[in-house]
Amino acid sequence: MPTSSQTQPVPDIESLAKDIAALKQDFATLIADIRAGIVGQPRTMVHEAAEQISSTASTLYGKAAAQADMGVKALAQEVDERPLTALTLAFAVGFVASRLLSR
Image (cartoon, rainbow, N blue to C red; front, side, top):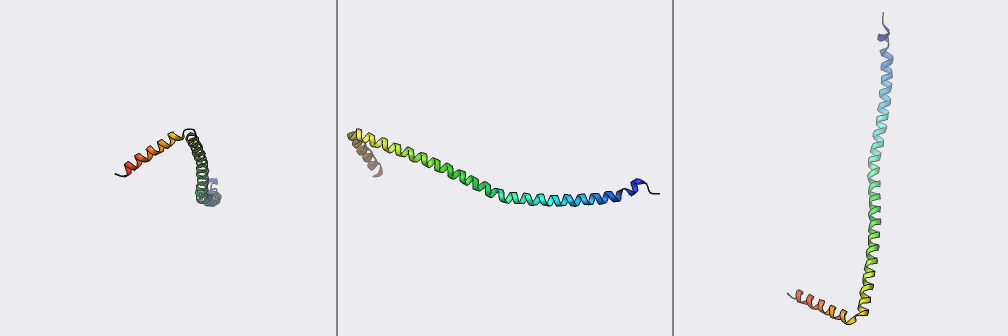
């Protein structure tokens, strides 16, 4: 005479088989999603990094250009205020440079 524990395993095995099939499908979907994320994510990250680098470079270039412009204006003002000193300084720098390059 079969006991209830002996007749019970058949439905449990069928239930486990269904659960395993569902897990297998879920796992396949998860792997596909991970692969899609891995392939798509680096491109997005690289694109975002490139945009950030470009933005930072543009900002730095703008700041450098503004500082260079201010330096040129300051030098022009100094030459206007003291032309003889500027001419003497330019002559001295040229003389020293020619002596160093002639060796």
